[in-house]
Image 1 (cartoon, one colour):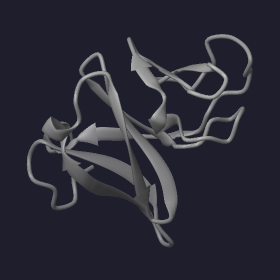
Image 2 (tube, one colour; image 1 turned 120 degrees about the vertical axis):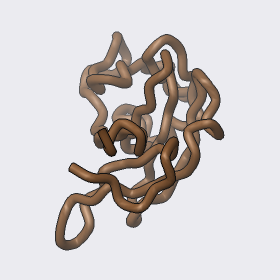
Image 3 (tube, one colour; image 1 turned 45 degrees about the horizontal axis):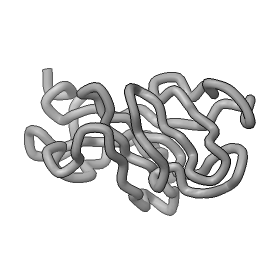
Image 4 (cartoon, one colour; image 1 turned 90 degrees about the vertical axis):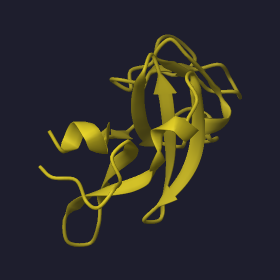
Length: 118
């Protein structure tokens, strides 16, 4: 699968457009610090783009428990913690790490344009 027209080193997110799944460039990976997250609005969907342990993750930017932005929570060692009630989720799988939430969050594939061009 090829990458759109993103410069090498950009983070890209798979987005469901009206006709197909497409990779959308979201900006240079270097602008996303380690163990941090930012909010993006892609094709009308709130996306939390997070970096942890050297990998980039993209997930729906809504906690499945408190309906607040996960991008405003803490990112640590492969997990995102919701700032409202402390629910923690595995960034790679979406599974909760404990209460109060027991349902996983929805996420979307993400990668670097460097990895996609290989």
